Length: 212
Image 1 (cartoon, one colour):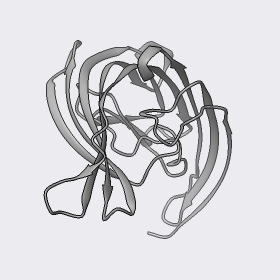
Image 2 (tube, rainbow, N blue to C red):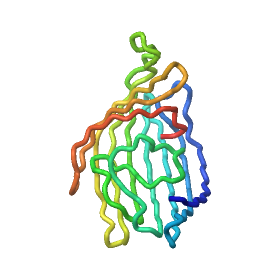
Image 3 (tube, rainbow, N blue to C red):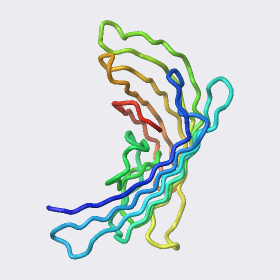
Image 4 (cartoon, helix red, strand yellow):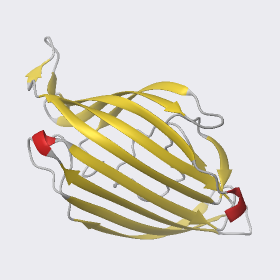
């Protein structure tokens, strides 16, 4: 299906990430994106607006509190979905985004509006900085996250209902072929509300995100 898409975005970033740091720290990232899309076989176009705000607070011993708030809206009720873990939830994946994470719940349903909020306590473990066996893979640093997510997928104010998920992740920052910084993420999440589940997941993120 042929389609025409036009979008414009704005990003402001004051958060810092140092060469040997475990996480983004000390600052915020704000992103606003609006998109227009028209498919050739449909008479109605779709307009989307999404705001993504993240704030990072440094604690002692390189620990970080990371918060995220997302509000996205569209004039089409079949646009957004919510649920699952997000292996590409960086500030870079701005355009064409219709699926948002809510750990502890399956990615089901569609609606015209989505709201998510999360709080993560990111705690460093160690920094091996050595290759794994004889493979061209280096384990650079390890950390873990404790998190709480809230979110809602809704069409009207009356259908707005928050769901909550909690969990933990172990994160290994690696270097593939000593050229491509990447992240291995092993997590477990539990949904506290209706349709919640206990879910384990494993993600590989290739490339070092400018913000996560």
